[in-house]
Length: 263
Image (cartoon, rainbow, N blue to C red; front, top):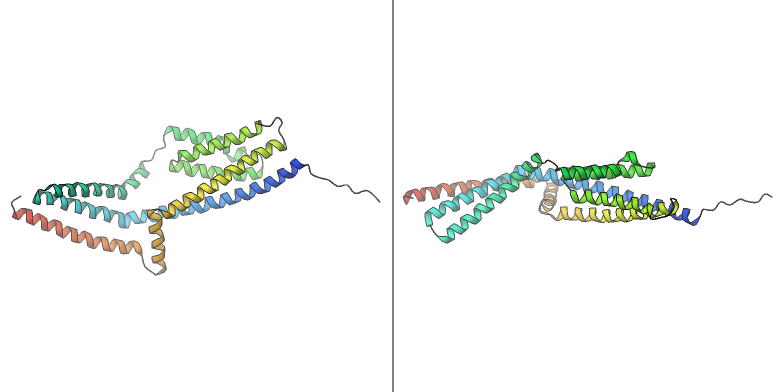
């Protein structure tokens, strides 16, 4: 009876295989979290644009009228209290106008500074899919490049710098081991695992922050209203137009009062 030949993996090879499986799972979870966050960003950006067009511009118009009324009241009453109120409402009107119109202007004028362009190129040289050593790494590098492109489009220097530092650390990990092989690969993957877990936590935190912000909360309220077959932004717009009409009447009234007093 022929003796059975049993092939056993070395401890290093077993650990390497286990780490590859764990790393693949964490990278899959990271890709899922990145996709979810990208969807949240896109949804909130679209909603914010609609909000600014339908509601933000009306808030700006109303606050401008309120500031003009307060400034006319200074001419009518000539008091320190009236002047302070006029200054406060003028500041508020400027802030509301910037919120309604400034974001779109900044987006149109965005021109990445040379430092950001250089940083992006440095990152791309290290994580471009063409530089991958195998199919798994190519898929991972493709996701990293997508993240780098998104960060570049947002002007997110912090994310790009972190990606560059990570790639340098992973590359340096191999040189910490005297000979290339399972030990060096295991060290590199351990660093990659640590970075991926950290990035998952950061993405989850950013998602929570976005949803807890003013636009995020308003978006949730709008979704709740939609389930009741209501359009929250249209309702807000209707209410603001009524307030603007009332403010316009008050402005005309105070103008008549100033004319009556000969001022």
